Structure formats: C-alpha cells, structure tokens
Amino acid sequence: MAHSFDVIIIGAGAAGLMCAIEAGKRGRKVWLIDHSAKIAEKIRISGGGRCNFTNLHTQPQSYLSQNPHFCKSALRRYTPQDFIALVCRHGIAFHEKKLGQLFCNDSAKQIIAMLLAEAHEAGVKLETSVQVRAIEAVAGGYWLKTNQGKQTCASLVIATGGLSIPKIGATHFGYEVAKQFGLRVIQPRAALVPLIFDGALLARCQALSGLSVEADVRFGKQIFAEGLLFTHRGLSGPSILQISSYWEEGEPIVINLAPSTDVLAFLKVQKQHQPRLHINNVLAEILPRRLAQSICDERNDSGPLANLSDVRLAALASAVNDWHIKPVSTEGYRTAEVTRGGVDTRELSSQTMEASKQSGLFFIGEVVDVTGHLGGFNFQWAWSSGYVAGQYV
Image 1 (cartoon, rainbow, N blue to C red):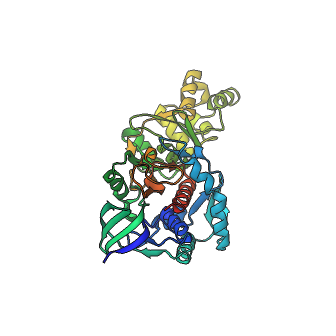
Image 2 (image 1 turned 120 degrees about the vertical axis):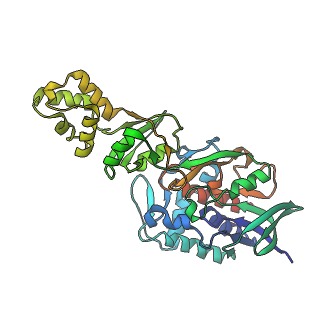
Image 3 (image 1 turned 90 degrees about the vertical axis):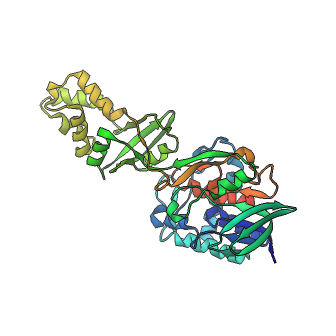
C-alpha cells in the first residue's frame, strides 16, 4: 500500500532541509529523501570545513540569472539576518572572514546538526539512500516509485542541486524532472571554477604554481578584485573563480596584476632616479620576485632601466596592468563550487517557487537558474528559496 505524504522533497541539502523545516512547521506531513547515504555533503565540505553559510552583503546584484529580478522576492523574505538569528539560537559561534562572509568558528557540521534538529522538531521524516525510479502526475498530486516502494504526495519539491562536485553525488536528476514536465532548462555549466590554459601560458603558470597575488580580473564589464593563484593547470583564487561564472569560452580575460600601481609611471620614475637598476629587480618591488622575473623573461626584457626605451617600458607595464589571456576551458564540474544555469526561472513563480504550468511541483536551490557570487551567496539562495517554497507546499 502506498504511503501518503503532504510533501515529498527530493534532495536533503541546504535548500531541501530548509524547505522541509518550514513545511513541517506548518503541520505538513513531510518526507525528505536523498539518494546518497550521507546528506548535506556540500555544507560539510564548504568553507574549508567551516561553512561560509551566508554573506552580510547579499543583494540581487550578487546573482546571475537570465532573469536577474527573479531572486529578489525570496531574498527579501528570508534574509541573511534571519539565518543568522537561527544560528545564534543554536549557540553556534561564527565570525566574518572578509567582505561580509560568515563562517562557523568550529565546524560546518554544526550547521548540519542545527538543520537536522530543526527538521526533527518539525516532524520531518528523513531517509537516505532512497532511489527515485519514476515520477508521475496524478489527480491531486504526484506518485513516486522508489526503492522504498510507491509513495504519493500533494506537493513535490525538487532540491537536487546542480552538477558541481560529482564525487559527492551531483546528478542531472533535477533537470530531467523539469524536462519530463515540459519545463525549459538553461544549459548548465560549471561556475566558480578554476580556469585552465595550454602551451606557453600553461608552462608559465606551472612554473609559478603556488604563487598568489591580489589582482583585478575583468571580463566584459564585470570585474573582481580579490586573490589570484597560479596552479599547475592554470589560474585559480577568488578573483578567477568569480570571473569564471561570467567568462565565455573562446574569449579573453584581462588581468591587472598590480591594481594599486600605475606600473608605467612607476618604471619611468625609477628609470629617471635609478637608471642602473635591473628591470627584474625594479619590477620585484611591486610584484613577487618569481612573477616579476617570469614577466621579464617572457618579454625578453633584461638589464638596466637605462637600456630600455619608454616604448618597451610601456609594453612591459601593459603586461602587468593589462594582461590579456585566453583560457582554454575550465576545470569543469569536478572542482566547480556551483552550477550556472538550470531550470528556467520563467517557468517558476518567484513568490512560491512553484512551476507555473505544473501545479504542486516546486524547484529550489542550485537546480534553478540562479547562481550566486563566491562568498556565501549560494547558501543564502538555498535558505531563501527553501524557506519560500516551504510556505506554500
């Protein structure tokens, strides 16, 4: 005999847990399931194990979507301050690292324990290792065939996330459900992900692997001013991860490796006052020595400043302040923090997260075409979208 629930939520991550808690508080009979044996793995591994659970500066401008207005309602109705209040009620100590990013002082497991405690108090039935084999719309709701038998519900919530970090269980499941019910899906792609290069540029990155600098990284009109890290495959670090969400394959990005210095003006002054200084040593005054030497070697610039024309100095300065490079690709979903794209927001109500042409079907969290910047914004979207759907399922 099929067991009946008011709400079945597929995906016990950040968004699914929040939705289950809110629905349970309303007295709804909730079954929260996940195909993995462990739940909330993305919470557990985030922020170096301390979970960057929100950002004080959350605003709609911090999100990418084909409809940039879609996220406004949910973010307004469940704010970072609301989640912070929940964290405080559970006595979890936290701190602001930088740029509004909030982290647990101790462990991301505290956030998971908090959500599980809230779900238990709300009467949520949580089960892991549940495989959903078929979904069918029936009169007044949905029928699910699972390895736990057949279940029915009035409201079905898809909170299965995107494709990032497949080793913790990421799949196409949410997108397939959307397509099954005729909903458009914006082509998913890896976001907040390192960029890779080939040829001479790759060799340079490999030689500089492990070196980091503060840099401005630009693509089109979008610019991020944070850390940049050279790796054995290319470039990473916060500024690169941020720009990767905007970067389009085949196009260059522009990097300023010394954003606080007008390098040409600096070199001209040094040439006037200290003409005998070697160019690599002068450049090392504003850049890490290995990077300064690499730039000089790449341009075949060496010897005293006095021997270099202003034209050569200008070209060298441009290589620092206006470095144009073309990535080959990204490292892909294996190392991507999130997935850009997903269920088209034009198919959903921004007020409820319900599919406009499929009553009782909801999509929340990363599976939706709303992607936050680095720094806690994606968790805040999970909390906000889960909260909103939880009021209506």
